[in-house]
Image (cartoon, rainbow, N blue to C red):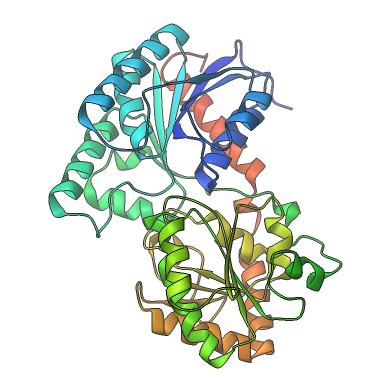
Length: 392
């Protein structure tokens, strides 16, 4: 075993809010699983996340930045920058590792102003996208270019995002590192003794085909298209049920759409569930209607489970799915093609099995969550040595 360094590095993770999402769960996992012989971990976040209590229980050092909030507003964001600067000046970390767009920009600026020796950021996806007004998109990209110049390393969870960053001039390409967003591989596929009983527990019917999606109910995840695709599939497969696990700001709009389309009892939104791995094992098809992605953790989990997937052809999804080989891709926003592929899978059990088995083979050790943590540790140590914080 490698000897620990001469002193522990103080590593501070900084994220906008601990929502129930892949980026947030992986940030919390990294913070709580760094080797304590080598690292002293802390986490700074805005308040109000559903994972706050879990973080309090599991982290030795957690700090809430009261002014750090998701909406972009000039004066409150300036106050958040000042608050983060004060926190980092008081904490004096060796390494600041930021996550999410708002915390990534404000956190890196605050770390630079506070004189933090090592600053890095993980892109779990970009805060800018093609659907934004051009001026707003350009402003986000300009901010990312400034913060990229202040970063000693930029971590990408997908090759597609790394290529985009290189094309847009975000940071020095030599500082770009690919570290996959990990999952607990041993949990997938989950063991389910009674699939029918589990389906019935969410109102899906014991013996009905189940189409599943997972994610926050927010514009990026585009849950309305999940409902619209369900309406088309149900014309051909009226016995099917559609389950979207997650919650968020779009819930009232999506529930209204379900009512207008007369899909009550057929398209279900039960909120977040702790038994997501088991429900994946009980499902028949996985669907993802995101408009942009870093690397969708739910898709990695579904593929590892052996579920055939139908997804919009977005950046991070292309790192995982090969159309017709281990799943199906549909053009972004093409509800008709998405629905047709889902119907095709529901009609063809051998096809579901073939694509599902290929999907499971596609998710190897590269996606292991503990390997993700170890790779981040190696990066922290390398950067610390380069900056003279540890002996070479």
